Image (cartoon, rainbow, N blue to C red; front, side, top):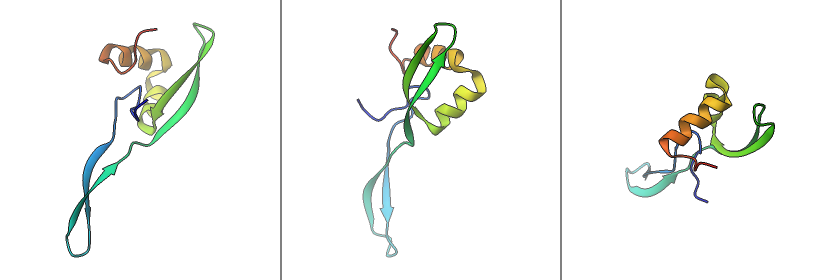
Length: 80
């Protein structure tokens, strides 16, 4: 599976390494991803998600059910 946050949809970005002499070479900015288990009390089960640090903050702010619903609407998670 590619390195994409399942809540926010964040993925790697491309940029430049810039040396002291201003030479530019391509580099990749990876996402700060974690594999984390969350408990869904209304379904009485655990869910394993690959989420970024921003995704964890989103879950803490909006709640797990709302974050999952929003991610499914945007197409970041397939419907189970």
